[in-house]
Length: 122
Image 1 (spheres, rainbow, N blue to C red):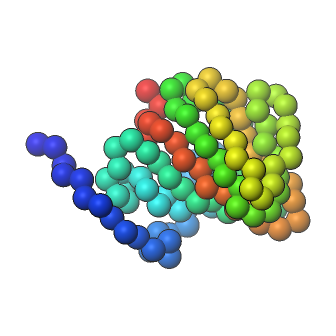
Image 2 (cartoon, rainbow, N blue to C red):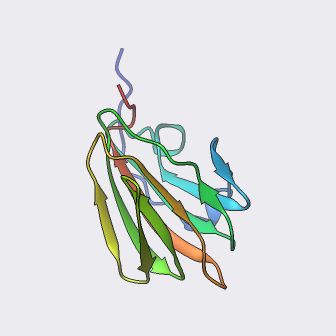
């Protein structure tokens, strides 16, 4: 029996901060739209705030696409071995097969949205 999906309105304060696996040094996220929070089946949508020096380890996705949208702060995004400064209003698209990492190299918090689809990397 399939689970019926319903529209959901949530306040960001309802979701606790988490440090997901392979995220270090105060790399915190709120899983705003995720199977565990909204029963989504196609998208993982998070807001993340990284303290100075926090990062996610360098990794690659097999089939997932990701979009990062920097809301505040600045950091370094490594894409296939090349590092680029990212800051407020930058949008980064990552297709499958691209190695990447983001770290906060700035003086204050780095806050961004990350949307990933599909949910599972299979």
